Length: 493
Ligand SMILES: [Zn+2]
Image (cartoon, rainbow, N blue to C red; front, side, top):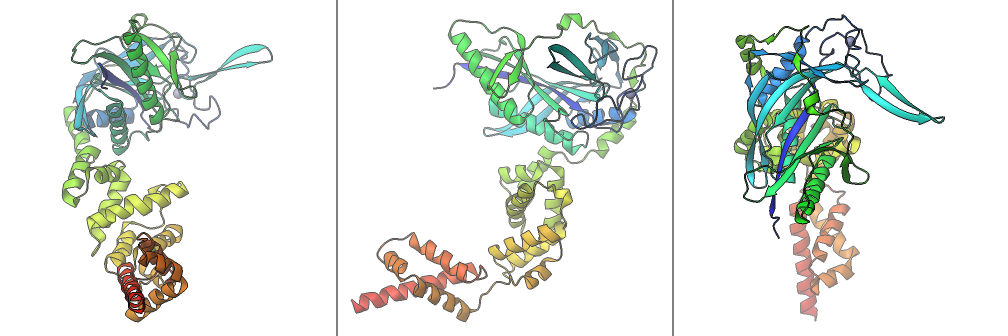
C-alpha cells in the first residue's frame, strides 16, 4: 500500500570549517572530545567587553570553496550580524552570524537514488561562529552547569537546502553527497560523532499531489547517518499516524533519542522572533574580489558526482562501483593511479580489488588508505601478475595481505612466499587423482546425482594444491577424471 502522504524534508547543516584558528581570534581549534576544558580561550572568544573580532581569512576561503562546489552564487558583499542569544555557552550574549546578506545563495547539489539522479536546491550558505559547550551535572545533592569555551568562536558554515527531499533514501544520499563534497574540498572531515558536522532535518508531510507545505518539525541531536535515517523515518510515521487519526502536527524542535528510537520535544532556548538580528558594528562588510573568487573556483578539485559519472563512462564501471570508488577523494586518486600504472590488469579488475579485498583489509585493521605501506603502483604490479596468470586469485589475496602488512614489491613477495600459480599438467593430474582417492564416497554420491558435491570436491583439490593451482585448469582436470571414473563404473556394472 502506498502512503497517502508525501514526505517533504529539507536539511540545515552546520559544518565546522577546520582551519587552524577560530573565526575571529587566533585561538587554535582543539578536539573537543579530548582536550581539557577551556584550554583554547582568549578575551575575544570568551566575550570580554571591548575586544574586537578579526575575520579569519582562511575560514572565508574554506566557505567560498564549499559555496562554489554547491554551485551557489557567491556575493561580492556579505554582512555579519549579531544574533541575540542569551545563554551561558556564549558569554557575549550574541552570536556573530550572517543574516540578511549571506555569503552565498541559490545553489544546487546532485546525488543519486534508486530512481536516478536527483537535485536539491541550496537556499543559502553563510558563515557564523560556534557556541561553547555546557555540561549539566548533578552530584552531592546539588546541580551544576560547567562551561567549556574551547568551541566558542570556532568557524561554522551553515548550509540550508530547500525542502525538496521526498524519501528517507533521498535524505540519506543527499546528506552523504554533501559530506563527500565537504571532504573533497578539504574543509571538513565529515565526523558526525564529534559534532564537526551536524545535520538537522526539517520534516513535514502533505497529501500526495498537494503543493502546499504541511507543518514542519526540526530534529536535532543526530550524531550519525544511521540516526538521521531513523529519525526521519520515525517522524514520517508519527506525523502520518497523527493526521490519519484526525490530529495535527505541532511546529516544534525535537531531539532524537537514539537509545529509545524516538523523537521528543526539546525545551527551546528561544524563538526566532527573539533573535533581534542587527548588523555587527565591530566588523566591516565582507567584500570579496571577484578575481579571487575565480581563483578559488579554479583551485577546486573535480567533485565527487562529476567524478562518479566520469568513472562510469571512462572505466566502464557500474554506477554503484563508481560511487564506492569516488565517495572519498583519496580512494578515487589511488584507484586512478593504479589503473594508470597497470599494464595487464584492466580498470574493472582494479576496481574489484580496491573495493573488495583492499577495503576488506582496511576495514579489518581500522586503517586509512593514507597509512598503507604501499602505493597504487604496487597494487597495479600485483594485479598485473594476476591478470597475466603468474598467480591465481587466492595467491593474489595472500600477496596483498603481505603487502598490506609489510609493504615491498609484489614480484618479490610472490617469489618469497612461493605463491606462483601451478599450471603444470602433470601436477594438476596428480592433485585431481589424489582428491578422488581420498574421497571415494563423495565421488560416488556426485555420480549418483548429488551435483553440488562437485564444488566441494574442487575445493578439496584446490586445498591440496595449497591454493596454488590454476583454478580453471584444475577444475577441468578434476571433472575429466571424475567423468572417467563414472564411465569405468558403468562399464564394470
Ligand atoms: Zn580566542
